[in-house]
Image (cartoon, rainbow, N blue to C red; front, side):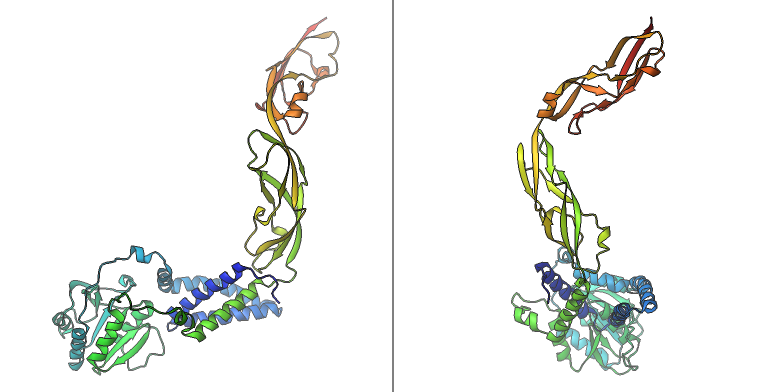
Length: 470
């Protein structure tokens, strides 16, 4: 069914499946994911309408897609920036590598539940790998060790810093009274107020862990990846924080390859099927084989050699188009570029291969006729050759030619040895004596007897014509 599947195609599908699944894992519970699903539906509708010949609908969807692409960049710029950060392979190189301070999670949990028992609302943000500075507004620098006394004093009613969130990074309280971005998730229950929406909002945009204490109900919640989890006891909160924030031991966090491949299997399988469907849609092309005539050009000819004969001048190339993204085949400029660095004096043969053609992605060479090019290379020499002035016609009336000379009298010529050895002189362009009435100096170009010969100083020569009366 698919007679032409390359190794590159398999790698292509694997890479896109991995990237798409990572995007799904990061944004599955955010509003960005809902927008992506809507765009996917519009894209599928566009493909269907285009293939059914519904020109008006497909044209409107195509134009709408261009506008939506720009709008998405503007609306979701923070999500796009965060995704690019997560994809960065060099972030571990530039991120700070200090050893984190060990936190007393049980002490923090007891402090949080003490605040809950007094109905003191609070938000504690624990930064993990991803930076949070761009999401925090109006924070007041603190930079102190995490202690029960410090956290309790910050959130005590009436203190200047109690309204807002506390940021804990690398085992220290960095800022207090921070304002966080609110979640736009419409599924959040109505009884959750601004404090919970702020905690969910920061976790939708980063990998932060947020502990929230409800002022109205005295409940403790843990926000992670856009989801809110109730916590009943200090021990339960301490265990969750230890699991999420404690530095991993050398043996911790090791996941078997079997679990990596087959864990959460259904979303992974759906992602692979979606990528395969898109690959088939892009690469399937009816009538995708075309034969074109490609001229042959050469490069890297060794110094001291000159080509005297090449056969043929062009080859027929069979091209297979495996992508719908390729423009019309008639617009492709196909040229066979052969490397002559390995040839020697005399007769040679060079194979015309797929690597000799510069083709866009999605176009491959399936055949070349003829597959060999015959070359004749000869030693290149230089020779000093006299200039011969070529004249036509006769001088009018009583005038006679006294002197006819060129400046310079000789030139350096370069070319194949067998041609240059036979060359006795190089003629100028014709000098018509019939139109000359007095002595004059004119410029004439040299006429090379063969295109394989050239003059090193390719400039017109001066021809001096001296005449006298009889």
